[in-house]
Amino acid sequence: MTKCKVSIALATYNGAKYLQDQLDSIINQTLKPDEVIVSDDSSTDATLDILNKYQAKGLIKYFVNPGSGVIANFKNAVLNCKTGNYIALADQDDIWVADKLEINHAALSKIDNESLPSVVFSDLLVVSAGNNVINKSFFKEIVKVDPINEKLESLMFSNKVIGCTTMFNQRMRQYFDEMPTGICMHDYWIALIGFTFGRHYYVAQPLVRYRRHSSNVTDASSSVWRKTKKELTDYLLNRRIQLDEHIDTVELFYSEYSTLLSEDERKSIKKFLRLKGSSTVFKRLNSFYYTR
Image (cartoon, rainbow, N blue to C red):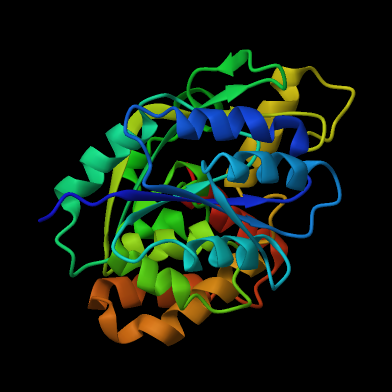
């Protein structure tokens, strides 16, 4: 197949403090992006000043999100990307490792046959607000799971496909554009597709410096390490994110795509959906079992 170029889809909202570091890390990749598309969700800080500066230099194009919220913001960014390109999602306060695009592009090219929705994702480094490394591997050292061994059964409980690490092909983009409202997160939807009737590949390298800072860490009495470990572990084990949101999203997914699933996949999803209406204790017990 023809070597695809890469569009970056970056969502912003009041991200002025760290945005320039992220934009510079994207622009200075070893594999240069074809375009950097930014969608802003009505920022009230200096975010737009920064975006205007980079746009004036021809480095990015930014658009205003006509909807509201993170999912609508990412959908708007992707909507404005060129047709035919691979899409790499980006968060506003991370920093990309210099060869992130090059590595992800090589991995996606290997699994992309153009007819199937395909996604690659990677590990992350966890860094402080000042960009000092706290942890060298998000998956190995913090949550202690290996996404190489990930199955649909455990993915439904705790998504390992972290949006800011992903790159996907045009077929997946079509499903992204059609993503319904009412889902818990956009990367969870991508993951469900990639792990069922699509294709997925995990790059076992940390390609994103995942920044933890005061606006997204809550327990001020703990050390940075303890706060980071607790918050991210809670995220993957669904103790803060309501499992009901995952159940509702999988229910939507099943109603849309059940005919594209294998019999085993349909059985696994039906089993998961039977948790709807169950007690919180029963849901947590199932979550604990499948996320080990």
